[in-house]
Figure 1 (tube, helix red, strand yellow):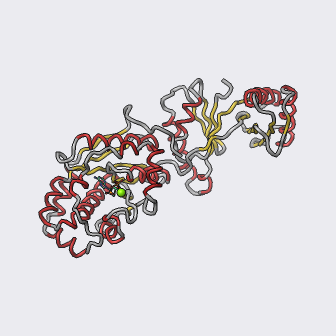
Figure 2 (cartoon, rainbow, N blue to C red):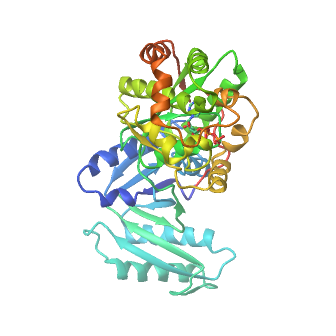
Figure 3 (cartoon, rainbow, N blue to C red):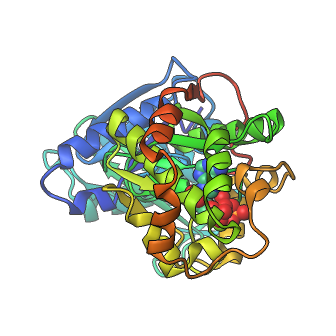
Length: 400
Ligand code: ATP
Ligand code: MG
């Protein structure tokens, strides 16, 4: 196998000085986790690169896994040569033979990260280019618009040769920004919000509210399937399943119909906040998008913000629905999200929700309920699952 290594670059990480070492460690951990299905693979890190020694593991499949790791800017399948000019030339010829089969022009780009190597970059470029031309007389050099660029990266351990860079997902390694708790409904938006939160380096836990037996077991399975897809990028994550059946009954008893959704949302956030505290999550994450529905007007969002001390992150706040759908399709969650199982909100939704709820009215309704007791009971009686530890559904396509 000519390309028996993968070279991983991580761009954005390098711009942050202080905790870079920690970020690099996290990325290395996440890379190892992504490749853990192949025990023969060896991962090492040096000089701002991660090198993966495949030892027989399939290049394409490994590459695909790495395209689901946040924090990677690009990846190259590479051929490795010892630090010796003749060996580098021989390997370059192999790469050229393979890459230039139906193409006619190339150039060599060399970089000498290891300054002890006797040839500098221009000299190496020349020597390697000449060797390729000798071996493949029908091709020529084109420095401006080559069909193929053979990059030669000379490092302390070896020389790495590669003809292409595959883009990575970008963002930050999951875990770098701490932990967030996602309010995961069965809808289209919240899985996309979760993805965006992971992209900025948040490790996730998930909370879903149901009103079993009024919502079905299949509705819950749907949420577990969505969660399983999220583990494609985030690794195994805890899912908290909370019943709000009793709470909904209380809201129905104590409040006018038009306030139901927003009162339920306030209860959800109170509960989520307690769970976040318990599990050490620094923020709550929702799929809210401004103006999308009555519960997502400024005053409704504000009424929700007031019941928690946690920061509520709303990664989709300014996204159009079509953009969100596009993302959901590429993530592979869309097809699951549109399955028509009732969720606790849709069952409970008033015909005419208030778009401009008055805080006073909300508080008056809540004063008739035992808010603290209901929250405590919901938190206490929740069910917990660790999603993504067995072979559940995974993302259909690599989203980028
Ligand atoms: P849709 O794609 O239908 O808009 P949604 O999940 O965004 O689905 P909304 O009613 O718009 O549903 O809810 C706004 C946000 O509130 C969700 O993105 C989610 O973060 C949170 N949320 C709503 N219902 C639930 C629920 N049953 N469990 C957990 N979080 C929920
Ligand atoms: Mg929504």
